[in-house]
Amino acid sequence: MNFLDEEYYQPKILDTITVWLEEENERIEDILLEPGVFNKFIHVFKSANKITFQQIVPIYLKLIERSELFTSKLSKTSEFLREIVERLGMEPNTEDKTFENKNRFLKGGKTGGEVYGRKTKRSECTNPSALVKKELLDILVHLCLRHENPRALMNEHNLYPIILQILHLSQNDDMVIITEIATFLLRIYSEGATLTNRYDTQGLNEGVI
Image (cartoon, rainbow, N blue to C red; front, side):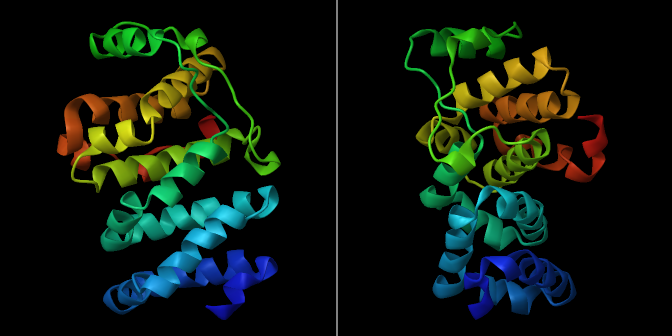
């Protein structure tokens, strides 16, 4: 784990951990949940530069898919959720039409995505690729489904208007998979964790983006 401080080795080490997790789930899961180790995973996720981040996001997704306890703990870690929001490169404006669009979606109508805007923060959080955005949304789905109150989680981190904006942009750019995942996240908001058994990231082909 000490080598996780070296950015060059991070993708390889993380990938190796996912293999160990599959082979010795309980033992490796216990290690991942140790406070020092868990905090190191948060630090690596937050501190990665743009190139490294593109390499480690799919590995974090594998870890999340293979460890329910790790995912559950991440879903309660505000620092991790805030980093996902920043890395998505989106930030909602504070206009009142947020709730108008939310209600319109819940009633089955189209959303007015133009209400929201982009807000750049750190340079590594600007203009994420479609694949990175897809993987981050996949991670969000798993975190929401492992949280006891997905709606409260999304409200706490102001995710609803951000996902609405992503949905609007993906529809305009014909990004089919991102549209599907964003729509599913909005359904989680409205229907809750009853959707747990209806989501399969393996069924989403990255090549369609």
